[in-house]
Image (cartoon, rainbow, N blue to C red):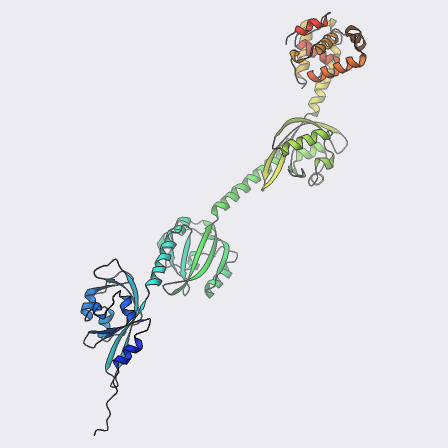
Length: 500
């Protein structure tokens, strides 16, 4: 009996029983190239139910299944993993796309590696091809790839090991004007993604550590030499099992241009506001506190800018007629504009200035405000008053002048006053009677005797008449009547038929 014991042989039945329930696919190959066995996982990965459907040997397997690399390059004869395993090559995580030759539209992805089990003599006894189904992962990555490319939001993906970009979508290319060749293969530093960013060093540190990069503003350099204002953020992801960083962008350049245009517009407004010869001021709408006043406004009011800003017209007692001021402020609250309203300003030194006030609501820096524009008519009013006084003095005795000269003087006075006009037909019969007696030169007492009315009643009628025709003196009333061809008669009632 020989002392030399034979080397133990592998019990294939036990081996098959051991690996039968593994989630990885296992295909056992005989040394002659025949497919000996496959577990359930391997059959499921090939969408078959029996080992015979994989083919009797490697040649038939190549006829039944078409394999491609991920770059879509077909595997030729001798390149199939089963054929390489049979040739004694070591296969280490080769990823291929597999399709049934009968239906090339059906595709799944496998990663394969080899395992050779030798017997006690060192001779290969079991040739095993181990498969891992990567189809769900690659399908998810394809969905991500399609979504990434179709997303209008600009995006970039770089590898973490060398910071080189491996993906760029159309959104980024359209935003910057780069081409795909300008970006893919370039590093983050070469593109200058964080070169014009206040927190660029922090972003590059987080990129090096593979950590989340919170959103921050940056100026991305453009190929034409300009730059674009963006918000950029980075999120670590895995692309084909490779650690990467996904950068997403929000384009702020339109906002920057709008802000620049707004700033330039505000600068132009500020300059024209300050240099305008017309007095002007700005107040808030809600409380009418002055926020700005130009030099012309300060000059006419006598206040300094520090005395005006932060206070209201009420605080300064700026206008003599408080009721008129409140009425103007209410109109502005009601979103009505104010045009040439006469108001008398109290100046700081105790003087007064006659002003025509215009105002309108406007939005400044997202706040509702009011722009006030004044026209100082003090000198004009003074000149007009002096002219009217001279005309009235001359017209006190019209016997020295012809009718044509009197009419011209009356016209001149009318042109130099801003009194409102009223038609004669708008006056009541009594008011026309009163106007006729005034034109005839009667006093209040004489008019009372003529009309059989008391002196107080006569005065009330005169006040009502003056209010309607916009005068406050008898001479002005006479001129107003003569401008309209109404000169008074012996019978006051006859004037009721007078026309303008």
